[in-house]
Amino acid sequence: MAETSGNNLAVTLFSEILTNEQLIRNRLTKVLPKGMEISHFSVLNHLASASAERSPGQLAKSFHVTRGAMTNTLNKLEWAGYVHIRPDWDDARRKRVAISPAGRAARDVALAAITPMISQVVAELGEDKVRAALPVMRELRSKLGSDGEV
Image (cartoon, rainbow, N blue to C red; front, top):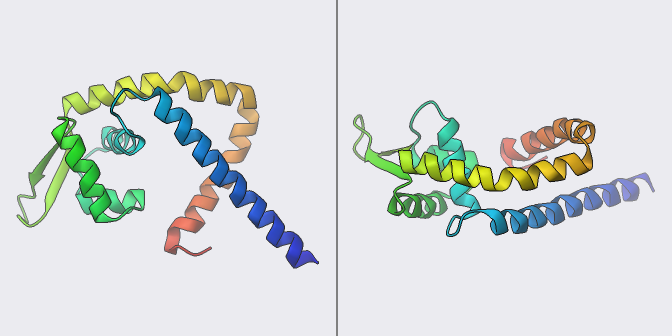
């Protein structure tokens, strides 16, 4: 009986997370600047906070996506002028990615667009509840991201 209860709890937890993820994506998509996708914002936000250039492989690993998916996102960002992609001076087979001034500005515009929406959600939930949920969410991410198995 306890195993069934634990399984139900696990299924309920993951169902809630997946439903919330879809709802968050829908809301973010509506408020992001025209033409910007969540993946674009995520990469720009990551690069804006990074202290150094990243390789496409490092970015793919950070976002748990394939190199091909990251290359596709980076190509779109480069075409828009939001990132600079250059050869690695130490190994010409590799590339280095940095956010451009236009990319930083686009990220700032996107952040300004989403901040009211996410702030409202946090206010409605209550800061104490959000603070209490963060350690559990971080631990879950850590367990899922470590090797793909909990």
